[in-house]
Length: 290
Ligand code: AMP
Ligand code: ZN
Ligand code: FE
Ligand code: FE
Image 1 (tube, helix red, strand yellow):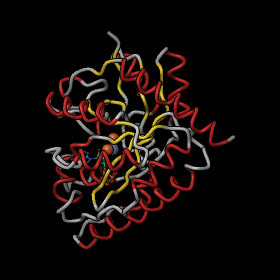
Image 2: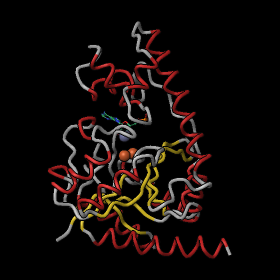
Image 3: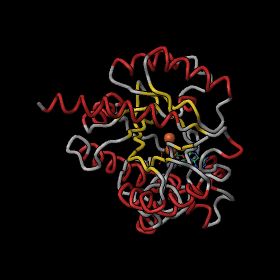
Image 4: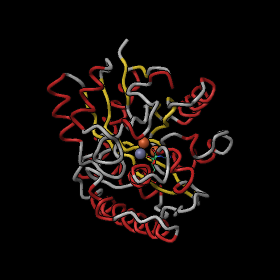
């Protein structure tokens, strides 16, 4: 059997391996294909693909975009899109500026709590995009928390002492931009929106009407029942099924490329389903350009 991982992060966002190291690690883990899906940036894709070529692993271009739907944070995975497509660049710039403002607000809140983190030091602590995990790591380094997880619980997550909500970026615009750039749009980790899945079928039907292409059914912490329910929903609605570990290296201890103890391995046939959907996406973009 061949296995894959379609959800991974590098130092270009909040992972701790650079794109080349990540691909080499995937090869060591015995994977046949991975997608690099950094938050709100595709900066690492060329280097990851170059290494993929050198070591004989398929590396799919990807991105994970933080959006919002009816007041709920929703992460969308985009696959196979052109990194510098004009439909994508303004959106990525806006996401970047949203993050900069949010990071500044979080540091301001921390200052009122007597915790002083240097903004330029924070920006220098990332190889690309800066998010809450980088703030968490600084809090740990300066002794304000014992682990990244504790820093999230004490300060950064909802109800934490320095929590700042993310700006609302419409998920429907995000789906449209991913598809205009020749990509396919997949709803990431649906259980983070609703652990019980009770509201997921309505949400997914609504997003599918706006062009959503797939559901991430294989994910750490998804029980076999959850995974099966999401696969059934995808099949009912004509969506593809994807899966990934959401590997972040040392930023998320206990999560391994390709799954590890936290999830079953992800079969290669899901990459084939994604490739088939991408061929449809390419045909669609070509027919629009005519
Ligand atoms: P942000 O993109 O700035 O909103 O930060 C969200 C990121 O933080 C997500 O990619 C998660 O992987 C990560 N994250 C959220 N909670 C935790 C946690 N308890 N420990 C480690 N990483 C976390
Ligand atoms: Zn992350
Ligand atoms: Fe996510
Ligand atoms: Fe992720």
